[in-house]
Image (cartoon, rainbow, N blue to C red; front, side):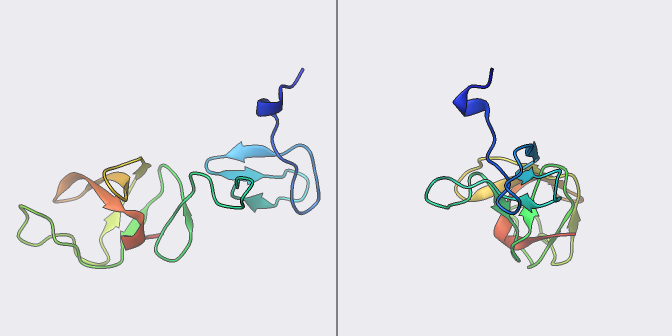
Length: 117
């Protein structure tokens, strides 16, 4: 017996009822359509996007798109630095990525300054 809050929305492409969640996306096994879940007003729920609009998920590898100053570091984080195995969090302000940057250490980044690899 399914409760209302346990049911997933049908596929917006083919109206298939066997949709499932995969990370931050919804997937339809019938037509292979992937989409981000939205609320009734049409806004994305909990979806974090990078600087160019790609949807990010835990474990992704990203590249920093602009040089960032880091307090206590003489060089900071240079543009093009790869950051592996990110974790999405509700950070301080709009810092929504928790990661470990080589040569710097653990820190939080804004999704607006990274690009998914």
